[in-house]
Image (tube, rainbow, N blue to C red; front, top):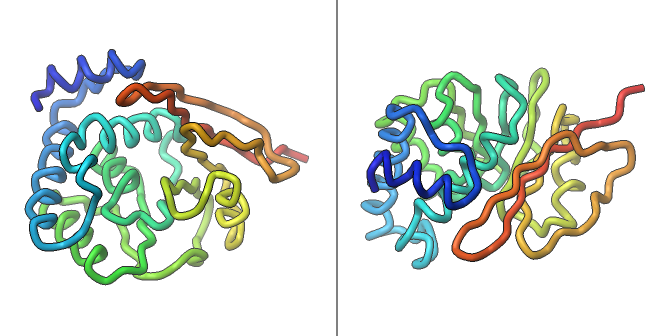
Length: 203
C-alpha cells in the first residue's frame, strides 16, 4: 500500500482522502507490527489480515471523520486496536483509551503504541466500565451487537457522545433522550457501512 493508493481507496469507499503522509506512515507501521505478531498470536481473522487497509483502515478513518474534534475517545473491547489505536495513529494529539481484558492483546497494544510513539494513548486491561474523568466519546466495533452496544456504553460514567459502527444490522437507537448528531456512510468490500455519533439531548 502506498499513500496515493490509500487516497484512491478512500475515494472508492466514499470517504475524504487522508492528506497527512505521517499518519499514513503510522498506520503502515501498525499493520506491519500486527502482521508480525499474528504469526505467533491470534490477533485477527484471516480475511482481515489479507486486506487490512480495505477493512480496518477504512473503519478507523470513518470513525475518525465522525468524532467530535479533540474530545477524548474510549474504545471498548479494542482487541487488536481497531478502531481506537488506528485513530491514535491518525490523530496522535487526541487522548485515546483502549479497554481490553486479554493479556496477549494488551501486550501487543502496549508494544505497538510504544514503537509508534503514541504518547497520549492509555491501556486498560479490564472490561468496561472503566472510570473516566471529564468528557469523552465512546466506540466499540464488535464487543456486543449493535442493539446491545448503547446499553453497555452507558453502563459506566456517562459519555458525551456515543458512536455506533453499523453494517447490515442497523437497529434503532434504544436509548431515550439521545439524538443523532453526525453520520459517515462508506463502502468496503461491497458492503454499505455506517458510523453514527449520538449525543444526549440538552435540557
